[in-house]
Image 1 (spheres, rainbow, N blue to C red):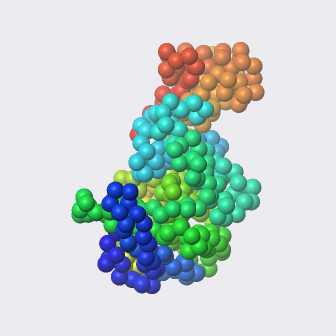
Image 2: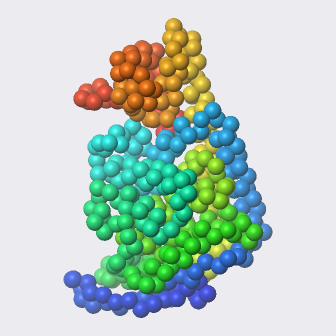
Image 3: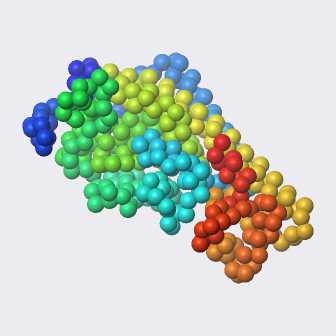
Length: 397
């Protein structure tokens, strides 16, 4: 980390750290500890306020679209899987989108898919708990990270604030002989009281009502910066932090149905995303980061809204195919809903979801396959999984 780049003392302090490299010996460096977030809006330009207003309008349009759908909750799983794939790719865990959408959550075929699908489990747990009244707290956020890391090499050190020093990224111009800590782009706070106090202050700040002093978009940007700068866990900080954006917007009432997928926009601009975060710490550039963040929410909301509309249109299109066929059972239309809400499913899933016998579920699935609405995912697989090709086409655009 280039300590000379930190020119804004008001943003935090550099604290000495030291350690021993097993190959190169002892090293000394500095880590950055951010100040606690203020209870007022940072100084922003008129241009940034206009971008914030555009983000509010885009999020309102997304929320209105979701509210007018017959059952917006049906679309939560496919949008969550898309977010899971993109947010994981940002952190270096890549699995093709089509594989993520069609994976069996109970038996993912690769370690990468396991980790990506852990994000979906984490997000669903978070939404369930906040809907039940659980507040955002250190223990709650730690539990989220623990779910994200299940079944990975980091499982044993997860679910709690880190107890070791970590470094983030690598500077392009760093010499190959440099210690990793010297070559890094950023060194977050060392483990211990300062880090623990920082995370506690952040979750307290996120629970507080800032509606009269800070726009919710700005508040989401501020809390996202603080979380990523503290980097409280050994792994998964980026994914948990971007999930907290959605949870924050949901908890402040900006989104009533948390279908927003934020990571594809940031993934496409990952270098600027990381640079904008760092510039808040080094130069106090809140204005540039918040403008970038608000533009990201605008793009994400517009993309998510378009996808919701497309999925809803496909849902109606497939139901029209059923109506124009010889099938007359309401359960056939209900099976279309299952196919939209679940990118892949088994006959047992249909049996359980629709509350019908296995024989009837199998008959329904076969009838929709004959109509070309459903198809068998992997014909050679022992477990038969089905999908709706038109739904997968929309999700992978």
